[in-house]
Amino acid sequence: MSQSAGPPVEVTAGSKGEWIVHLSDGPVRTHLPPKLIHALAKAKGPAMLGYELERAGNKGPVMRMLSTGLGAYATAADLQGKRVLDFGCGTGTSTVAMALTYPEASFVGVELEERWVEAARVRAEVFSAANAEFAVSPNGASLPDVGRFDFVMLSAVWEHLLPGERPGIARALWDSLRPGGIIFLNQTPHRWWPLESHTTGLPLINYLPKGLAHRYAKLSPRLRGDESWSELLRYGVRGGTVREILGMFSSPDAPATLAAPREDVGDRLDLWLDTSSGLRMPWAKRATWAGLKAVKALTGRQVAPVLTIAIQKQS
Image 1 (cartoon, one colour):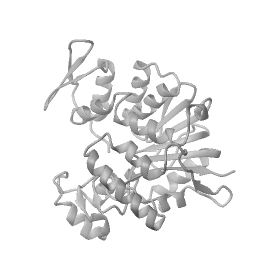
Image 2 (image 1 turned 90 degrees about the vertical axis):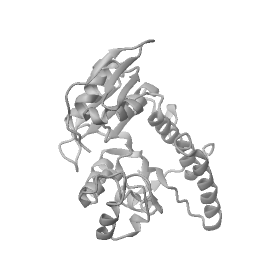
Image 3 (image 1 turned 30 degrees about the horizontal axis):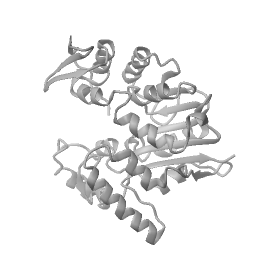
Image 4 (image 1 turned 60 degrees about the horizontal axis):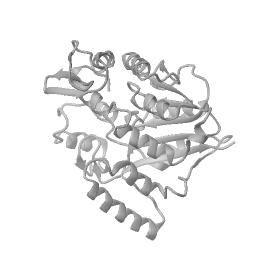
């Protein structure tokens, strides 16, 4: 979602190397330098700056989910000397965090919003992530000329693509992937999970047809209430499924297959718990995990509230 840039924010020096960012809802302390703070404010606007500062740390929740998720399929040795595309990189939080964690790999972040890419470049500069570069997409269904890759990441991206955009960008990403390469998706809500927790917080909304779902969404306290259906789709209300995604990332000459996590990681349900249990309501997530493991034992099916999957391109 694009946010309009607002006026410059006030930043003052704090103690112990901290900076104090003065926002409308109160001061926020951060170790990010003022140059990056101002770049983020310009990119996202003051209203979103607090959220950006919260997730900006290279050891924060974003890095936890990426390192645990991608690390379940690829080790540091697997990434050595490889090229990694971070599609939908936003202001570069995930790209720079991964670049610093895997300095022997090279990372390219791609984003549609030019202001966001400018902030991402500032982030790479202030953190000295020389192995991270960024490019602006020409439109929502294609890639800039950035070459081919061994790994492609979509971190909290798929759910924000409109249904009409998904096949085109899937084809472009698939074509950019080298044979044997892996596309890694995480933080995508399951389309058929009973509680839609990503956008509306409403139960069973995704079981309703578009018209009823749109009217039902107006009851959500998270939303303004006047959003169009297209806006709700862009916000990520419909999520995705493993079957849908696997079907789009494939072709007759280079079929796709789901990659299994490493044996020491467990299955995709274990991976979901590992990447989410440090966040809100860990006890509820563990109880959900136990129930889902029982369903898998009875039916053989793995259904997690949030998708963390890897798709490999066969030679």
